[in-house]
Each structure stands twice: as C-alpha cells, then as structure tokens.
Image (cartoon, rainbow, N blue to C red; front, side, top):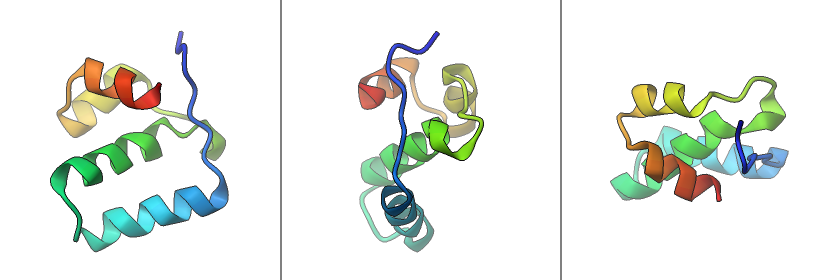
Length: 68
C-alpha cells in the first residue's frame, strides 16, 4: 500500500503535461514530471510503483522519494 498518495490539481497536471510534451527541460526534471503524472490518483487509476519502475526505467527508491 502506498504511504504517500499524489493528487495533482488540474493546473499542476496541465503544467507537468506541457513540460513533458515540450521536452526542453533537464532529463531529471522530465523524469520527475513523468513519475508524478503516472502516480497521480486524481486521474482515476494511478500506476503502482512497480509499473512506474518498469515504464520509466527508474529505481523504486526514486519513485518513493519523489512521492514523499
């Protein structure tokens, strides 16, 4: 069970989607934005940590730290 849940507002979600779609930021910033978008519980089904790890190629610890 997730200890920390991510619930983005509509404005936050749009800003992150725009950042990712433009692709003009640092790689770490883009990866963090993708993690937050996948973990967002406000859009219905949030990805589980294991699904995010396989989808983005990051470590589980990175996702845990970012959710916190």
